[in-house]
Image (tube, one colour):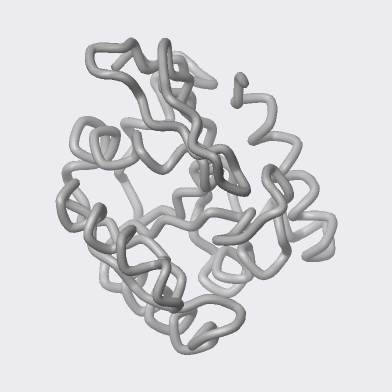
Length: 186
């Protein structure tokens, strides 16, 4: 795993405070290893859909060393948001995919960023570029890297206060979408 960051010191290595990790849904396969390498000082919880489809992802998270909080806009969303806010206050990182569990792909929704607004926690935008990968026949063409392929990690930290000081939640989602797309190479 190779790191390409937004600055010399690497936003990926900054574990000075609990952080909201934001990445596209189709890049989830790389997050476990990234957390082990760059954020091992903090426990990380990921928001996973409350639907039956989310069960396979919860198993994958467990296998990769991450913990799960179940909920989505359709099932247990407000409770999941409260759980994630509590985890941030207790010192854990949390992960969210702003394009959700059903898409559309690469379209950030404002609800995904509500946690950053209420917690005032920094946001770490995260993306992976896979040297060689299979693309699943799913709504987001989920990436599964092939064995021994090179994975490039890109990260950029954004302060929640700055993001929401000048933007409505819809505008903030657009800013996050644009910044995350700058890190994403398809």
